[in-house]
Amino acid sequence: QVQLVESGGNLVQPGGSLRLSCAASGSIFSISRMGWYRRAPGKERELVASITNGGTTTYADSVKGRSTISRDNARNTVYLQMSSLNSEATAVYYCNVYATTWVRNPDSYWGQGTQVIVSS
Image: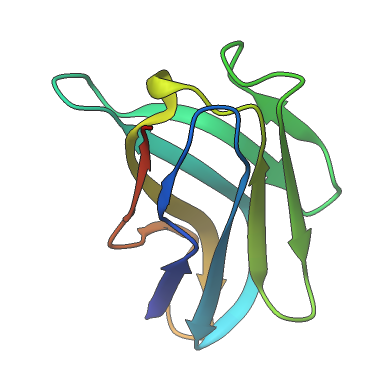
């Protein structure tokens, strides 16, 4: 199994910055794709950003230029640096990884979510 521990969610003022972290642990053999999703109040969950093990990144149009996703493969950790935050960023952010473990074929795993609130 794979456990994901997210951190970094907080209350931040409009225009502020925040960095989310997600550390994966367990019987991990490899992690191919890591990403962040979010679910805003009353909306469906959506992709924010993702990064492959080769470093290829994908961003939602709404965060392009204001967010950076990165990963530390040695620590099985993915980060999301967000800046110039506005109220539209208010959501629960979920970490997602596509991993292969020593006992299981590649599968998708989700974190519990971390709350981001952008408000003055």
